[in-house]
Length: 449
Image (tube, rainbow, N blue to C red; front, side, top):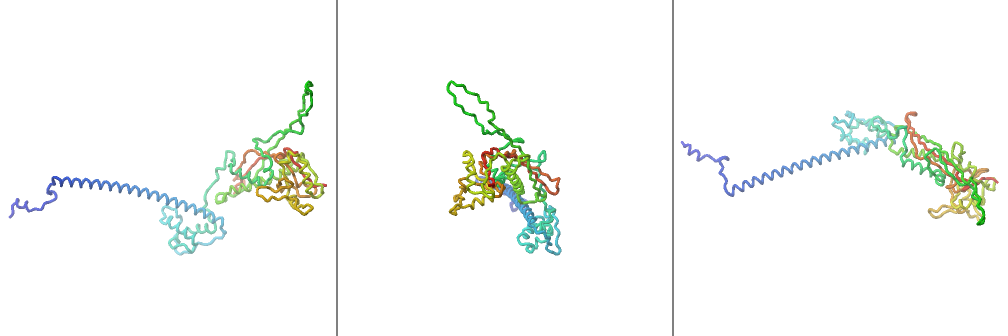
């Protein structure tokens, strides 16, 4: 039997009984342990930084994915609006599918088939039609009655109807001042329709009338006196004449339904500009010629202070009468004057020939240089009289001095959605006045012997 001392000698050594390292070996082991700890700390920091970067990337990816989904939803809304506008009005059935799962709201957070399958169904339907919808996406088309009707017929607007209100149109008094680009569009189209606004002098006023002063035909008389002779005092005071333009109010009232305003994919503001511009232009052009001057603007044809000349022929005019009309205007006004002619008179002047069968008309062959009639430009004014007995088809005038248009500053829109439901009326109001300012700067040609 072995003694305790002998047992201790033959037992294997455990970890606790490893021999202690001394000298260089101990230093090496400590260095290795230190470096290993540093390496583990470095990798832990790198892993933590990588996790942070991954989290940020996932967050950004989620945001971009949500943006893409929002864009896709906006595109879908536009497609639905276009489909409603182009729909034939015929209601067609949804593809028949047995055991179709009913999905009431693809945007429901509790719906497991929320957006992915719904978007797949939309994409397949739009690209390939109802027969090209994949089997996986087909059950989602049970949303399907509303979706297909909107794509094909524009029906069921109650489910996909965007809610929009033009509340910015309201002011304290129920109206707003038009935005500057709106008013400039109206002005541009008025110039295209009414030559008077292009060639007459247009002024702005801030009140209910415009007043100005012109020099009359009287002048200070000249007398000759010697060095020692007295100088008489001239008491003539009738040298200036005041003139006044009264401002009148005119209104155009286009109407649209509330649904068309909310759902339209076109620029309804441009439609309002076009509609109101036509009405303003036609009215202003007509009154610029035929206004009586009592309760309305004064027109060129009705003004008593514009001299007239007879054409010399009972039912027509000649080029000789056009030349006499031109030369009857004083030279000071004549150099900037032009012919204003109705369409009938313009055709007659263009087709007139001389004794050699050559046209008297002088067409321009160079861009930017207008055609001339007896050395002066011409402008068509369709509201002038036709060539007929006692009519006035031609006016020769320096229109900038002859006619003046006074615009009241601003244009006003009042939105009315109460008095004529379901229509929304836009009362577009413009205030202006006009009259003949200097009749001596124009001449009218009347068809008479």
